[in-house]
Image (tube, rainbow, N blue to C red; front, side, top):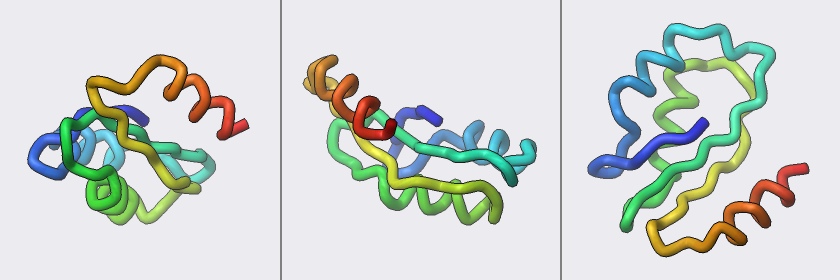
Length: 78
C-alpha cells in the first residue's frame, strides 16, 4: 500500500480506504514517499484503524532514492 506522507501522516483518503475494505486475510506492506517524515507513525495509525490484516514493516522512500533501492527492497520481501 503506497502513499505520500503529509505532515507525518498518510492522506485522509488512506484512512477511508483501510476502514472501508476487509483486510482480514490480506498482507499489507506499506511504503511511502516523504522528504523527511518516517513511515512508522503513519503505518501504525493505518494498522490501528483496521485492526485486521497481516501488517508488515514498511519503508519510506525519498525523492532522491534510486530505482535500484526500490527494486532491492521489493526483492527482499520475496
